[in-house]
Image 1 (cartoon, rainbow, N blue to C red):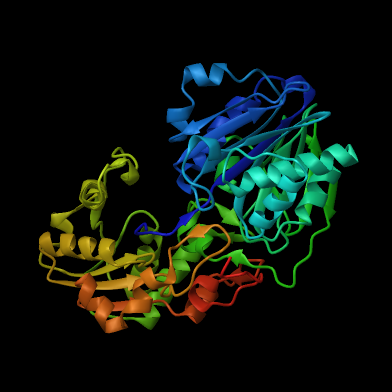
Image 2 (cartoon, rainbow, N blue to C red):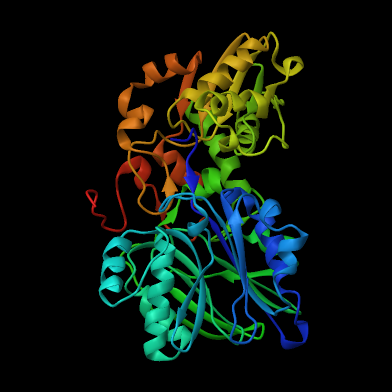
Length: 465
């Protein structure tokens, strides 16, 4: 189990005008670099070239998978989809890296997916009965095979994707690409994860976050609506249809707390502004006399700024982050992975020595990482450490693409608030309230899924499946 929640993936699709043939793969690469924070286990790009869909993918960071030789394997095209992966359904193996390319009698389909489909096991069983084979364990392979099977019967990619999406339960942002440069994007009817559209003079792009559009020179056009499907050809939307409905729209609140980059805007709310609001609310709910406010990089920094602004306590730099250490999971033993915290974050003694420090972080899962961070600040000479958390305590599983861990592993289900404080080593501990978090995100156009804190799931799930 990881010390922080992890989310499954980023998706990107680009469709350029016919005269822009050749640029799609490079644009896709840049977009995936911009969304590397959403998944570091694998990356892939598929391009449309006539009836063929060449695909290059592999385990590792985007820059590790796509060296000059790998990029040369992707032919010139004006349509491409890409993906960065963190595994929640299916192990971290080469077979599970996306996009998936599925063959059927009259063509091929490439699919990339962000989320978690809760009925994928049942769908896999039904497709096996129809004679389909599976080589991976990811729910995305099931989605891709389902789309291919239905498209084979309907003869139309848009109809195939839409009819397949109607059979899916759970969270899914999809980009699917067929032959002849056709691109389809779908957001699940709850809107659990973000998906947005950008445009420029050369064409259109869809992305999990607006930061990817910015990085590739696309102007934000709008968010894809929950339940909406888009057909994009030759750099323009040729069909848009809201065909999927749900009883409640429910964007994952942790997009604002932790997952998304602060320079992204999701469903009308700036991620930076949301985190600033969280910090202000924390200062109102949990004031304390202190000398300096420090955020834990990276997602704690903006909340720390908000705490400082609201409380009037000066903002300082508590840690210097080593941005070149790589992924913590590359270390071969658990002890080395845990000690990687010290390699990544080094306390800035000059900023905290002899001071009462308010330390702002985004969440506590097991408490072990927080304990090391508090100990590091104390070791740098801090006189007091007051821990403030910009998310409420985790109490429940997530079934929709966020890897939190089993409920009996969550520290808030095992220990009282005072016991958590003692385990982390902080002088005081304060979590933002659920009401405070909702208030901080009130400008989002969608309702929020906060089931990991409250147990109130927008979509029914079989917890025993």
